[in-house]
Image (cartoon, rainbow, N blue to C red; front, side, top):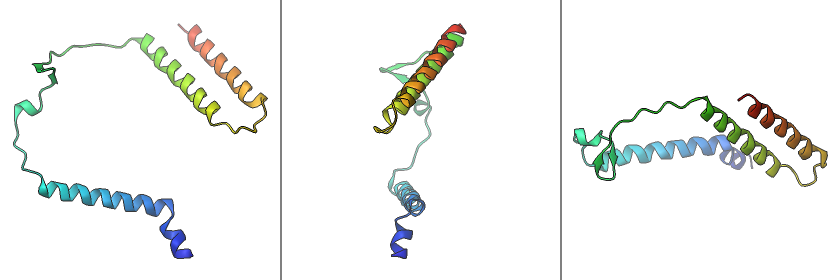
Length: 109
């Protein structure tokens, strides 16, 4: 049983998957056609036309939206994975803490 436990451990499975992935990668390099360098391979392509470079600098408003998105989704993940037999004050307390965090985040603007 010790050999089976060793073979089924997550570390062994991870190493096996990594080795198999590397072997597939190296094998595919031998059967793929040779790459020919070309300018067209490095150009951006948008709907059949050459893409024009545009500069867009996100402001701090974008940061607040991204942080709000992260806080709300992490709160939803924590609440969705909470055990069903957890006391009611646990998830409700967490929701209160997240509501305060979102309020403070909104107040900063």
